[in-house]
Each structure stands twice: as C-alpha cells, then as structure tokens.
Image 1 (cartoon, helix red, strand yellow):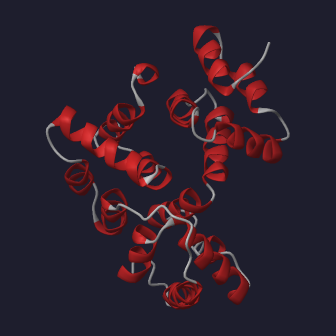
Image 2: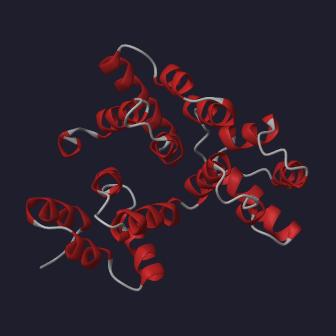
Length: 238
C-alpha cells in the first residue's frame, strides 16, 4: 500500500500505524518528525487530520507516556526554521547547557528537549560540533550511559536523524536486512520514503559501513516483484 501513496499521505499512514497498540513504533514517529523538512512534516500532519479526523500530536501524546511522550510530542509539533544561518554565540552557550544537563544525567531536561525540538538543523549541527570540539566527545557518546534505555536510544536517534540522516537510515537498513527473516516493513519504509530525498547518500553510507552495495544486499535478501520494486527505487541497473 505505501508504494502508491504520495509522500504526505504515506507519512500519515505510517505514523497512524505507529500509534496503534499492536503496531506501536516510536521509531517511526521519531523518524517522520526528525528527518522531514518543516513543510513536509506539516503536510503529513494535514494529511493525517484529513484521513483520521484527529491530529497526529494528540495520537502521539495518547499512545506514549513519561519521557518518551515528553520528547516525541514537541518533535512532531515543531515547525523549524529551514535556513542556513547560524548563531555561533548561541551554539556555544547551548553546547555548554547540553553538556551540563548530560553531566547531571538530566536527560529529560526541558532545555535539552527544547533545543532538540526547536532549533534549525543548521543551528543544531553547529551546536553539536561545538559540543564535540569543546568537550572532546560526540554528544551521542555521552548519551550512551545505558544502551538498553529506550528513551536514550530515541534521544540519540533524534540527534542522528536531525544532523546525519543517511547514517541513521543506513543503520535501519542494515538491521532490516541482517535480521533472521528480513524486516520488510523497515526496508520498504526507508526505500519508499527516501527514494526521492537522499537514498543515493544512504546507499553510499551503507556501502561505506557494510562493504557491500545496498542494491546487492537487497537483491540477496528479497525476491520476486517486491525485489524488483525495491531495486528500481534504489536505482539498480541490471
């Protein structure tokens, strides 16, 4: 079904599936909120309201709780500035603030979530570069204190999605393809939603990290019409 929908309808459908009890998936919500442009996220939310007669925000809020709700609701509610302008003074002060909160293990601090959910992607990148330069560690390294904590996993994923989406998607694809029995949902989702956005960059990142071209990995793990559609979208040439 996701093959035939236009991008905003597709995102609305995927997000709705992700907020249902049986197909609940915080990662899909995070992905849509953090890797789409502001306008694309807005269109997805409009499509969601038209199709499901309620808002994406209220469904995300209803189907999550605690820190995960505290993170995901602002991420889906935002309309970020899309320009390239960067305020370096702000980047320095917010890098310090992030470092202070992480040192205190205040991972759910409202300022930390405010910075991640409202700053433009260019501004965030500058802040996180500043963090790395000043404190000698990438922020995601400092957020790896408990690898099994889902909130921290989502927090790290949000940072990756906002600043280096191809790295995030290359990992999702690796996990989908290397699973015992391919995770077709994840594979289909990434290939269809990124085909006209950054799939080429994702494929390059995938090959760099896994030493096998993405089309070859997909070809060896799928078959039939499903394989043909995926390979066409990836740009595979026979």
